[in-house]
Length: 375
Ligand code: GAL
Image (cartoon, helix red, strand yellow):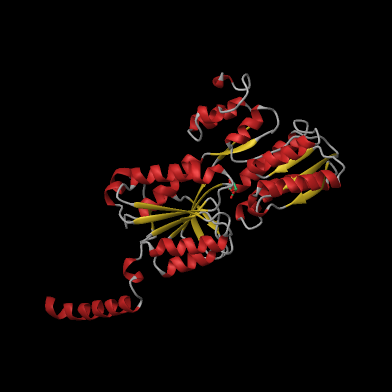
């Protein structure tokens, strides 16, 4: 009885083996991307995870990517997956180079890609190619559109933009004229942030409470391009500017330089994002109004948890990806993290307490008397 019932099973197994062979190695090696009900167990994960993960960073303009993002990702991988090799690439804002780096990573044996995309559209090719090789992709910080993306870890971009828009409204008056400097048009986040702050600013404009005198995007989030935009705005508006929405700190710093050249720095409220050391120092010096604190230690750690889980072959525990983001093709299991606002010394202390930057880093070069712990 056992013998006769085994025969069809063996035939089926043989057929499956042939299909797998026809599909190439990928069908055999494919990492299990299933979300499984349950919680993340660091100790078991550390025992089981094997293989290679590649972290693909987008740029070196901001210190976050090669700083807290990379450092915390590597540290968390060492904890949750000590046997796993971590490869790191940086595309320097070049999306074609990022695609080559993804190919190189897979050639070098990457079993999982963690990608902070330079270009939300172009990076779809990275996901398509990786999928064909059975390599799952976790979008890190920036969404990749219209591709079979597996996971996404980020901060709620609408919350970021809303915090910026609300702060600018609270710190400017009726009839004030504003300048809006967006981030990179190729980065999905830049649009997400803009959705948050423009909803607030547009309503004020519609009601005649503010005007927007100048608005521009900033390729690659490049601070020097933002400075050029601000100089153009000041010229076009004859310095009649009472507030600036800058989408991040890197751009805020050069926008402040443009204001400084006109003797206006410190008088014009300006927003930022990222709680960079430079941004926090400008806040403490009274030249920048606010920044949005994204705890990159948590974000990098979350990406490492998902990557390590994938490398156990047991799927990803559902507690890690409680949210869903539609990327135009699939509903991507996601982790949407919370943000905070920094606008004073207490906010800066909060960032230091979180471990994003050390006290020494924040104090370096800061004049005495601006931040008590430095003195
Ligand atoms: C965005 C990111 C921001 C900022 C910017 C420039 O995608 O969410 O935090 O770093 O890129 O790299």
